Amino acid sequence: MKVGCIQMYVAYSDVERNFATAERLIREAAVKGAQIIVLPELWNTSFALKEIATLADVEGTRTKAFLCKLAKELAVHIVGGSVATKKGEHFYNTMYTVNKDGELVGDYDKVHLFRLMDEHLYLTAGDRVNRFTLGEVEAGGVICYDTRFPEWLRTHALQGADVLFIPAQWPTARVDHWQILLQARAIENQCFVIAVNRLSHKKENFNGHSMIIGPWGEVLWTGGDEEELAIVDVDFSAVAEVRTRIPVYNDRRPALYGEVVRVDSH
Image (cartoon, rainbow, N blue to C red; front, top):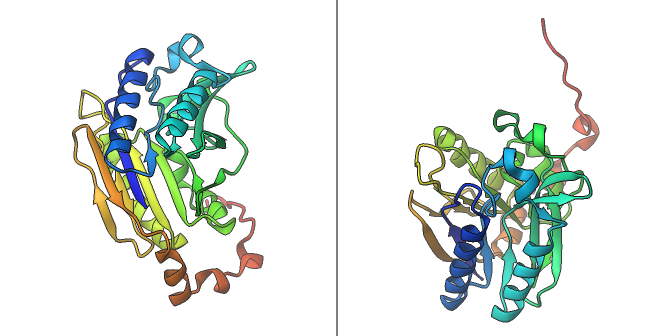
């Protein structure tokens, strides 16, 4: 299946510009044959958290309509990265996923909020697993900082995900962590990882390096540090063969480590 990764410049607080960029690149990806199209994290607003009260998409109405319309028109699945939303009285970092029939199949609020960028001061954390199906592909989706919590990604894999989609705004300063963690998550879960990072006009902030990684940990594609639309052919059937060769799921002993409590040493 052909996957289109949209590594786009995200303009700070410029919602109209960002919607226009996303639509242009989604249409271009469809023309080039993409069957699944993936956007980065917070592509509607960037990390304009201090302005979130005026910028957030109320109930996600605009984003859902936008994604559903394009998905149905272009007959493509869209993993809609994430957007800033307001639901009731609270604000969230929300990932919407739409299938090629224009149906919403995934609605996920980021579970782990990144304190170093003050997400916890402005956003409310989600509390639900994000499992969905795109055609015959069993998938899960998490957002950026969630990647540092292997037990959370394993939860999605245990519920049947063969691929994990990870939209992100991962900073340039820790791009080495990004690359290593993504490969680790693919290897330990024996699944594909499709991770799309954004760009900023100051490359020292966010500089792309999006990745597609196979279930053996092999890097199938990595982006550069410019705006990029990559179309990559991914054989999702490879997951079954890998899981047969090294049966880690059969050899797990969750009774020993199901709920691990941290013990501080002194």
